[in-house]
Length: 222
Image 1: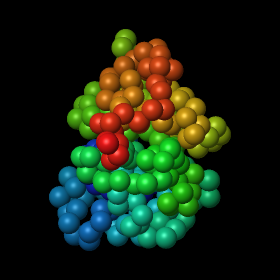
Image 2: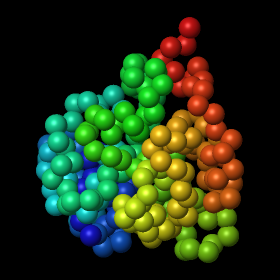
Image 3: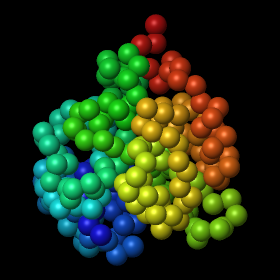
């Protein structure tokens, strides 16, 4: 399998390592030149590329960058992936901590729907709520008691099936959290976000979520 990863921060870099451990071919890019990823390339065997080239002929694309930087991606950034290849976005909107105000999200657009609109492709939301060190170190075999579960939002079909299979291979229980229109249930500030729940508790937390954006997770605090 060939994976293109756009973003080499905590989650993007960790997924680079984990996918390489599974034997996948990985192209990884950041917002700078490939040379700046020489250490990651050397440590993992991934290939560092320019962001515009990361998705080329990929079976899966991951976008893992600060939310505020999504509009800066090149037009058609994921268009060179294989036909039907799913796109994962791991982003979170941190208005006070990093991103500033994104008006469409503050006005009620779901974070992942905004990302999909910006990049011109449907997305799946996963890996956004797990701490990167746990993603790196706490995977466990299927059937392990209290195995950490990861919610996955997006459309049904072959793309979802592939992502569920990959999440399981990485050592986590995949949980269907509904379409992207419901992905607010796993955004920052919700009961499931940042928790290492098992599948049962993940489903319960998703059901308990509300759409209200609390003051901690809004740029409009007054």
